[in-house]
Length: 202
Ligand code: 5GP
Image 1: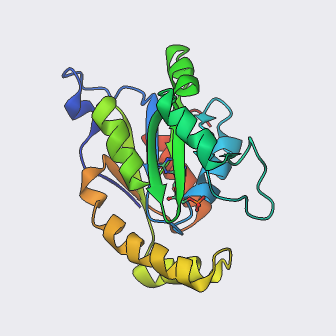
Image 2: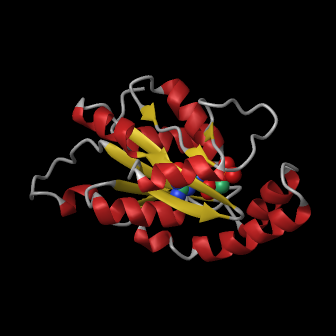
């Protein structure tokens, strides 16, 4: 199910046809399945470019440097902040995450639709500097479903999973800030809705 909070075309110049969204932010609580949905979406829509974030956290099993994230140490992250290399960055748990600015600007200048999969703080920062960004909130079908996904994936120690759940509770309250909401009932249904919402050609 997709809900539009504010139709995109109501914020534009008065045209009655929605414009293609060029920069999209996909956000939502940890554990909701953003990464899985984005991977499936990118496979289905080759024209869509997905930003690779920089993080100070360690890779999980199977994650590849430069593909899932660019894994850096704190000193490198600090240097990137000092050089204004981030479009946005935020601390999540004990680690920092940021979106490199230059590749996003290059893709947008080339007319390539771009997607950022980032947390709520990042979404707010991007909105502040790029008010035309289209922000989509991915939400779980229910609270119980989110709890079982977060605690069941087993990639975090229990205390980290508990902290992420507490944070997820706060993040869910931010849903009305977003332009559209997609309920992640299944990867395929969430992808179908994103393809439509972003006016992509699958
Ligand atoms: P994880 O450690 O599970 O990969 O990511 C933790 C959280 O950080 C997720 O909510 C994810 O969307 C968010 N995240 C990933 N990359 C970025 C980024 O570049 N900026 C921000 N603000 N959040 C990010």
